[in-house]
Image (cartoon, rainbow, N blue to C red; front, side, top):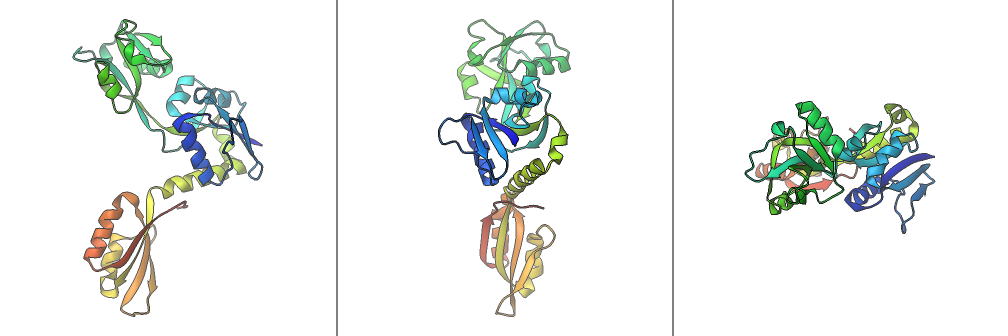
Length: 282
């Protein structure tokens, strides 16, 4: 059976399980079991610490894994990313004491505290900067105040915790992270089970970008309306009992749905309905 590792707790775990369930896989735990067998799809879902998943996959013990891009890179495991999953987004930044004037290119000889030493090492190497990396398991923002470090590198969301510690973000993001599906190499993508999994996941991810719009419009305004809703190839146009009107159905981008509804109503469309898509293949 195919072995797929997923995070055992936290937001990554919840969203990974929700995505896989939406894709038609049985992967919910009834309590704290470490393995859930989906006999129908011939997959064992194995619940592991997010930081360990890339190591198991890189050693070939487990076929695939869902973890954070930052965790996969920091593990130094021999894995590749085969699908970004569009959740668990975060940005990785340096932070220094406010008004210190420190910038990443001037970190030579300084101490940088982080829970992600490999990400920092790679970035410093790219900058040609030599600094001491201080590895901590958490609460890195207090390390400067305690005299352990001169700067930190950490995941930044709202930035509130940094401000409370008297720190500010400096420089560009070291990396943008999100949940990813990883494998040891791309060959596994060609197997029927993994190809089916990728097709289902991609169908859901694509569907989240789109919505289906349906509306009635007079024939004289149909061409104008279809310019607003051209669909993927072309819209579906169906006759109504009133020969002067037609029903139109087309896919639109989710982020444009409110604007399109406004414009359709403005030119006389009626019965406008926008529906979310569960999955689709383009």
